[in-house]
Image (cartoon, rainbow, N blue to C red; front, side, top):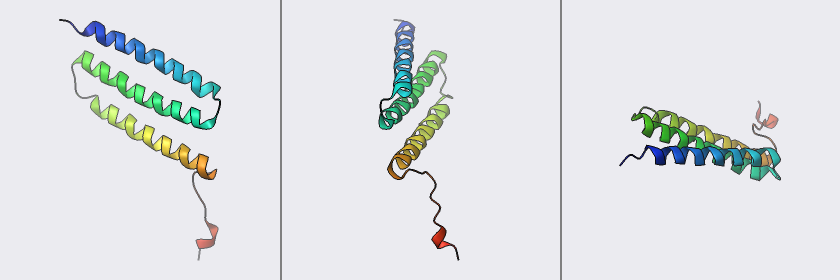
Length: 97
């Protein structure tokens, strides 16, 4: 049985869900909703690359999946710090000697 049709259907579903997440990123309503939507887009991009890897029959795209996963995690961590403290890089001027 040929599973290519199922993979193509899965690709279409993931692309449609990315479009839905883009709407959530643009419209909001709050900053945490936007951050979660951006993180979900990163996961969906990893799924698309995995599905293309299956279609092409290669395992070399695993590195791209890992890279996107690391960048999505770092982006989520930076947004979380920004939402918590209001800035990403803290400059403590009292520690300079």
